[in-house]
Amino acid sequence: MSDPAALSEIAERHGITLDRVTAVGGGCINRCFRSGDYFLKFNRPAFLPQFEAEAVALEAMAATKTVRVPGVIGHGLAGEQAYLVLEYLPLQSLSPQSQERLGRDLAALHGHTHPKPGFAIDNAIGATPQPNTPCDTWLEFWRERRLGHMFRLAEAQGRSFSGADDLLAKLDQLLPEDPEHSLLHGDLWAGNAASLADGTPVIFDPATYYGHDEADLAMTRLFGGFSPAFYAAYHEVRPPEAGYQERIELYQLYHVLNHFVLFGGGYGGQAES
Image (tube, rainbow, N blue to C red; front, side, top):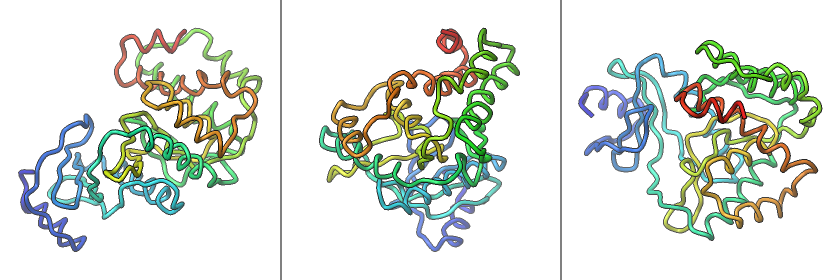
């Protein structure tokens, strides 16, 4: 971190001590650092709404007292940079026991619901804006705020998908109109889950909103990394609904489209198929 004045401003604003700041790798969107008990993210000033949204999401999940997430210290602007300060957690890979516990914890998180799908604030899925304005039904939300949104972003990049309009028109034949709207992590792939040394599972980097719990589960299956014990533990608490297996790819499509929007390449063909 090359701006001591910004660090001093952040420390004073939030009543913390920041010293011996070291860079942390692994992210592709923000510049990340550790200072003692704190984890700091920096980006350009225009990125501040995304840090605010991440803080709101982490606080919403923490308030359920179900699954461990990093604590939020604060966010704002300092030294011509947007920043987010979180609790630093020493993380390690999920053990088999941690996987099983995460299944139960995620199921408990999904037990917290809202009358309408959406969220109090827009956020991002990776670096892609994710609109969360509530809709009257889940079917409408997935059609407009999720698949329709991604199809429009792809079209703005010059790519249209054969059958997209037919799919959107026929969603009522493929999805339940209005299932329970659970509090979701929103971007739950293996890279956003880990554990503490005592085995406590932790999830982070959320794209949170209220929606069908199957949307979170579908994302866990897209890139692998979650064990059969994770799913068994989850479904002990929340048994799968009829048609669950058939809906997985439809919920994964949103994320495949997002990867096309972000990275292009073969993700377009994957989405088309």
